[in-house]
Length: 335
Ligand code: ADP
Ligand code: MG
Picture 1 (tube, protein in one colour):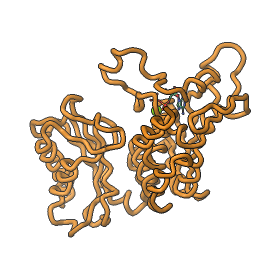
Picture 2 (picture 1 turned 180 degrees about the vertical axis):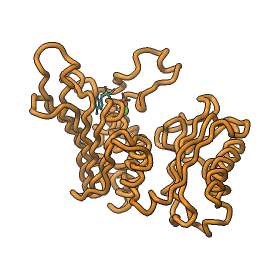
Picture 3 (picture 1 turned 60 degrees about the vertical axis):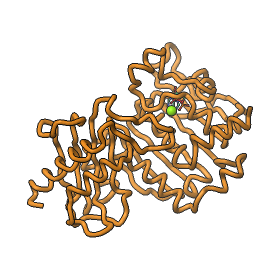
Picture 4 (picture 1 turned 45 degrees about the vertical axis):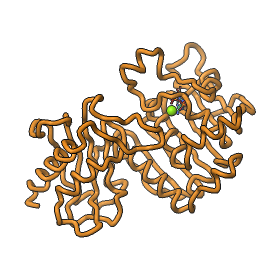
């Protein structure tokens, strides 16, 4: 059964970036106002995510690494009405821990338990087994450290790309979350060097400044459409896109979200590119951070956990709505 668990793990945890995504979501679900992500060797040696969220008691910690345990769904009705939290499968920690060495240190916020101020607990989990649980001194919040990812699944380990490529995936994931949560201070470091840090005190533009730098931030143009959207499946589009002169040769800087979730969608991408017309030049892409709101039943996001590509009931209507919103924003700047 361990083998089955490990094969299943490979489906969910494909590479370091997939583990980073799950840990980051857990931190945000825990109400963190600060999340630090530190990886070594692109995440293949270690991943450490530290938050100041609500933390866990010893009992919470023991439960957290069990399979199919989640504190986020209380009954089936929750599942059907659509859960508010990001993660809800209760699989991530167990799954990551079955293909790595996992150390979790956590202390609940003082207001979460009665009586004595709670102390911290450290739980060590390796290859799917709890190795030790002991009290430890630590600040409120949680630190999850994943080392030697895929140490017991050599086939999966072999599929890892270069450190640079794995780190690029990690960077893209952390960037997506940092941009979508400007009220949370998100930082990323690689091999001890800080890559970016948002302040958690600003708006979207402040987050863009922290992540992409001043030149990009200064070239951004606001997109905001709700009333003037053409009749179609979109309830709102907001965010910002860059002046056509600020562009890159990679799609990586197209950060698009549907109902708060980072996604890729060819309909959204084509709508954006059509709005720029020929202004970008061949194979060039703008910087984009766009949030789309659609009725839950107009989109299929619940594809395989690993996939981020979404489909809409009416892809073409979405493409046209995105194009029109971005065109309007560019037009207002005479572009
Ligand atoms: P899920 O997020 O789907 O519930 P996970 O395996 O990711 O499943 O996490 C299991 C449980 O562990 C969560 O439901 C939550 O109660 C707890 N947990 C995980 N990470 C954190 C964290 N950073 N802070 C507080 N609680 C956490
Ligand atoms: Mg989770």
